[in-house]
Amino acid sequence: MKKILILKGDGIGPEIIKEAIKVLEIIEKKNNIKFEFHEALIGGQAIDKYNDPLPQETIEKLKIVDAVLLSAIGGPKWENLPQDKKPEKGLLRLRKELNAFANLRPAKVFSCLAEASTLKKEIIDGIDLMIVRELTGGIYFGMPRGKVNDSYVNTASYSEEEIRRIVKCAAQIAMKRKKKLCSVDKANVLEVSQFWREITIDTINKDFPEIELSHMYVDNCAMQLIRNPKQFDTIVTSNLFGDILSDEASMLTGSIGLLASASIGDGSKPALFEPIHGSAPDIAGQNKANPIAMILSTAMMLDYSFNMNKEALIISNAVETILNNGYRTADLGGELKTSEIGDLICQEIERNL
Ligand code: NAD
Image 1: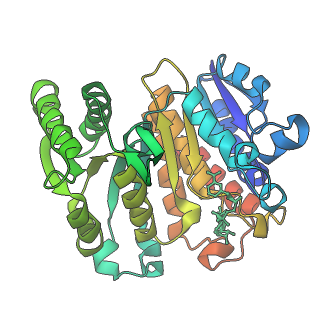
Image 2: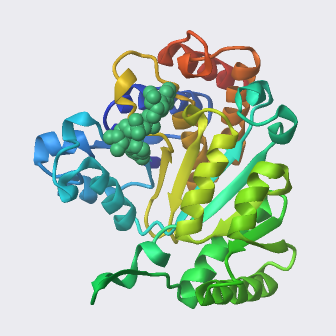
């Protein structure tokens, strides 16, 4: 029995998460596994009911589940609230509660959509890379921060333990892929990056000798992602660099409606799986949203939290088949509704389980 916390969120959230649940129910029906769904509120919905974007009720439920599936939060209704009360604050607090120090963002280009990218087809066709971003340290959290005398400062700092755990996490992922890991830093300028590089080399040498480790400066990496993205398999980097590079990599694939992510910790708390897009208030409630990023986030959950690699692969293959067969939602220039493409993906999964 696997217990999943469903956070439906705001905007298109409830529509797309419904499709993810359909997928899980098909897997349940065909395989000998039971999923138990729990629900809780986060973001705008939680503000409306509890005046808190991450209420205690939701935090309590985190303690009894094995994984968390979130759609997206936010919308114009809550935009003018004070910073601390905004829906986005709920998400930041959730990641903190889960001690999720690693953010995994795969960027895979489906051949049939390669034309949709702003880059040439031959550059991006076949991209399949994973960016592992450190999520709880670095310049976003380092102290001191804020006003110091007459200046404003932020501090980029990493401890040995913080570097080792993210590098180990990325190495474990690389081991399941092509065993190629590129560590991105700015070691030619920053002492914190020099330390990052030293600890990365030591961790890989000691624990993952089969991995082919390379290093790249972040400015070069930003360029290489556009020039020749297929050279990368798994990238590991700090919070700030990962924030920028993962957004850049996501644009290689064309549509925001296709990209999944995971935020994971040391395994003592459930991991969080969510699409990278927001709550798309402009199309909410119209059955128009693309549920694929949500469905692929669900596949990541099966893979990373439940070790159901076979089922995860069947889901991503089903998505690819449906796209190859020309089925598209509006964001990809088609006319299919959210529920229609969800049904097609479910049928394809059912055929292959
Ligand atoms: P957005 O990602 O919600 O939307 C950007 C554009 O992409 C919109 O035109 C939208 O219609 C489209 N889009 C997004 N997801 C889509 C999907 N699955 N299918 C089809 N089209 C899709 O970003 P935004 O408009 O900047 O933000 C809207 C709200 O979402 C804001 O309140 C923002 O704070 C919030 N947000 C939440 C998250 C999150 O929950 N992780 C992330 C980003 C933004």
